[in-house]
Image (tube, rainbow, N blue to C red; front, side, top):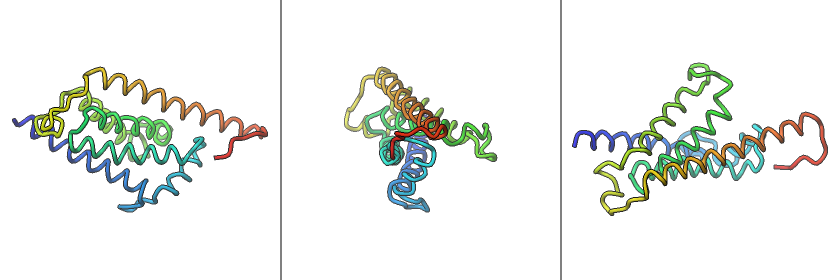
Length: 177
């Protein structure tokens, strides 16, 4: 029982924090700038279709955080958090090293590892999955979801790199965002 209470606390706290980050990106709540500013920020990093990626990031944080907090459709919540943290590390924090005091990836890495561990575990006793008897096939759902995430992030990064190289060489035919 103590383990299940600990898992519940972890799920609710991390899930609500992730929902808050998503609400910042999507709605401008909690001191965030909203979807337009998030879109502009991602466009500045060279991502193609920055509005799509801004929406995906916000939905992954908000929706993934909600699923994580409720323990619903496990492991989709942890997978959504993993997706956003991989993207955050690759796009924002990697060049700053590990420690968050330098803008590094420490915080995102902690959330990524926590979400991965939670995604690999069975849902705790105090989850909506247990209450409603929902059970997605495990570990297949986790591993297939992780592969999908890695492909999507790689696609975003590779198209970003191509776009930046095209822009730096002054080539015509750049794709407008």
